[in-house]
Amino acid sequence: MNARRGWLRAAASAAAVAAGVSRAQRPADEVLRVGPGRALKRIADAARQAPDGAVVEIDAGDYVGDVAVWPQARLTIRGVGGPVRLLAAGQQAEGKALRVVRRGALTVEGIEFRDVRVPDRNGAGIRLESGHLVVRRCRFLDSETGILTGNDVASRLEVEDSEFGHLGAGDGQSHGLYVGAIGHFRLSGCHVHHARVGHLVKSRARFNRIEHNRLVDGPGGQASYELEFPNGGLAEVEGNLVEQGEGTHNDVMVSFGAEGYRWPVNRLELRDNTLVNRLRLGGTFVRVAPGASPAVLRGNLLVGGGRGFAGPGADVQGQRRVSLQAWLEQAQR
Image 1: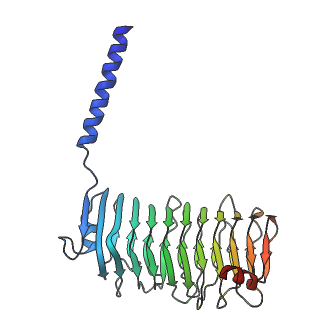
Image 2: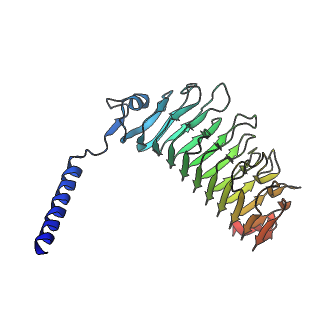
């Protein structure tokens, strides 16, 4: 028995040593640096050269007409040293976006995407065709769309601490964020504002988690819906400020199922949100089309006039209502 224990200890020790050697021999993620003073001066060059698993660091500055398709299986792209601005200047990758993500897992951090327009009028800062995209601390401004995805149900989109503003082609077909029929969408800690006729956020995803955002179509904004789930799915909406401006092109703030349901589970859950209607007359805070499970509305604050809920039925608990004037006075204290 002692001999057997000794053999097991020796085998475990040898395995640990081998694992350590393997980890020591495994190269760290390769870092490619892009900037005016670097060997790689254009982001498009890094896109062509970066191996799977690389980190691309982009020095602060303006990169004009520097578009790219990223086909890597795993990649991190981040701005360093100050603001990094990608300006389309009439250019686009494949007639779609400043950045096209083809597959794999891509993380983008600390970059501004601006001034994207394409012939189809849906030019995006980032186009996710398939894969898993994580976006952190980025800005998407003055374009036709901020982020646009395809309809691959295996795809995932996660957006954190980012800003989307002054987006849309003005035709009602392009939006701040337009998420297709993917499997998973999460929007957290973001500020989405000033849409041009389209919606602030539109998602056809199977699962949606919308948490702790400011979805506010401020002065001069012309958004339609502030938040739309046209094909249902499971939508968890929690802890957001959602505000409809006086210039809205649709008096409904949150819409669910308006284009028909496509997923096995179709349920809207709104918890602990503040929904503000600045319209002087009319307006609907939440509208759910027939055919979904009863909506769950818990602990929300409705500010202003208009209809609170339109739909076949809802589980409503702890809902509060105040006038717009009282809410504004309280906010100024």
